[in-house]
Length: 124
Image (cartoon, rainbow, N blue to C red):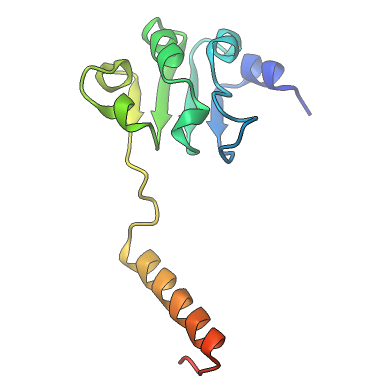
């Protein structure tokens, strides 16, 4: 087990996969980015506000992080003129991992099954 600072100093890849709550808000910030290993890859598959958008953008622009991937960022960060959008070492993708026909079908089937159960009806 390592503390966060030791983990950041030693890791080639840092994957953020936590929920957004008061303790994780801006977890990746100027202090933590100062500790991240030079050349490390940061992958944020969690909520955008867990990563401070302004500091990491500047830090990555100065070569500290080799690449930063973000699945979800606040709308203002994705808007034109924001540092993250114009950086070559940043990959942004929409928050739509559940947007596939099979995922939609599973959600709809689950919803209908729960509704039928609540109404005391059978669902195929």
